[in-house]
Image 1 (cartoon, rainbow, N blue to C red):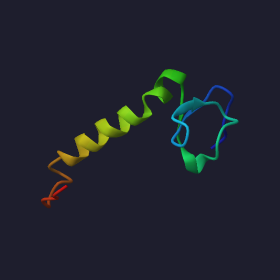
Image 2: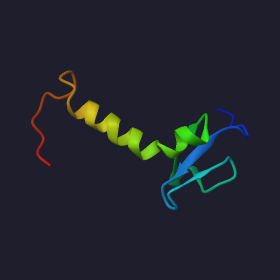
Image 3: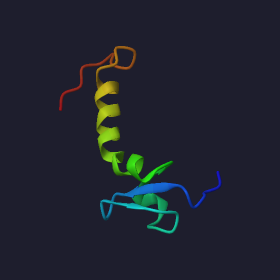
Image 4: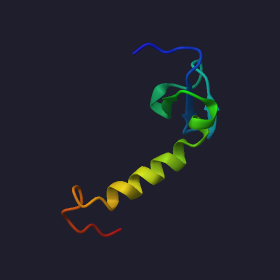
Length: 65
């Protein structure tokens, strides 16, 4: 996958949106097509985790928090 100047990442270390020349990829989520999408990265992760936790196709065991 090639990166472009119009891709954005959410830095997990600094909690900021970064362009292609940011922190190492191991410290960030992305790439996202817009700054807005990257700024919602943690919200999106939380939403997806909630969906997966409640998906009967993947929830065949009871997991306690």
